[in-house]
Length: 244
Image (cartoon, rainbow, N blue to C red; front, side, top):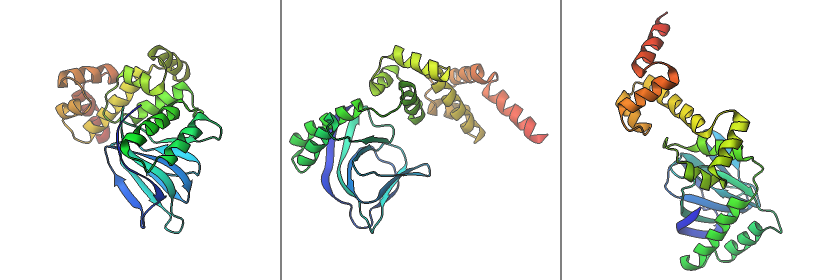
């Protein structure tokens, strides 16, 4: 993960009435928690920020942030743009005596420095975060990555970079755990999402565009390969069953 730019870096308590509901932004928030009570919420599930942990928030995903006004969150934070963009909520414990802990110490030391000084420190911190053990297997991390894809576009090279293993190793691990390849799992999710949109009344050409197919014909062909019927035939079958 490469840092592109940053803004809003500081170490402080959150401001009065710190609350952001259903925010949808193009940058990530990098937090190191020092004290207080604060929460990240997505899809109705709230996660409390833990003291001594690092957090990265995803981009272009609806989420909420808030704290307890009687116990304001004390944190070191930066708003950052990265490549690739952060696509899921990340939580990592900072254990004493590790390279990650050293990077956090530098982060706090230079948090009030100018961007030219702070940027390399944040890049070091991001690199350490990528290498830090999360307790998850390669297959589990891959599944989390695939589940977080909201643009219905899968690039295996980008996946490999994000997970930190070769495409071949990722595929073998995923297949051994879930008995399906990552590409097939992604396509299943994409087809199920397409079906939900069709059932909501969207046209085939609209769904084809949303699902990133080259044409409505390519989408219909993929849909029939997955479900055994064309979109029109499938919806007609559902209508007949609902009338019985």
